[in-house]
Image 1 (cartoon, rainbow, N blue to C red):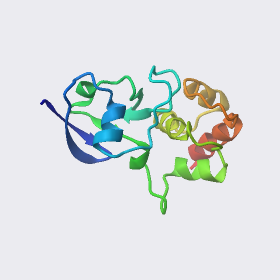
Image 2: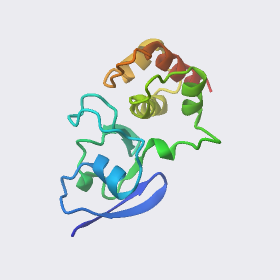
Image 3: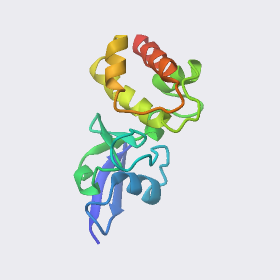
Image 4: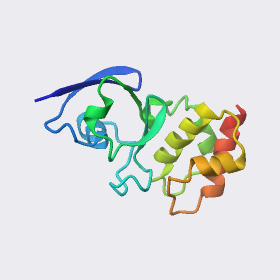
Length: 153
């Protein structure tokens, strides 16, 4: 069985996968026990599964495990802890930017990628940066406020 080596949340990882096309989302959830990235649509349309691959936001539901070999992945678990959340996670908490919470992980990862490229974004830049992530609960204004708050830190 082929082995795939990569970095996950700052640590080295090696996983076996019978299929080089197996989505990273399944490897994260089933092999590594990292469940913050969610299965939403399975078609890269909702953003619930967003993770960072070498700092770039990607949809883990359609990213094959072979593509991450030799690269670095960051999942929401790699940002902060409940006792010491990342500035972006803290801003989401302060702004009460989650209702059902299903989209939150993907929103945070997309926002993290945005803030790494544009540390102090405008409202329009935040909206554009999160446009590919769906939220059915209607907390978009709180999500935008949280990203803007994190951009001021």
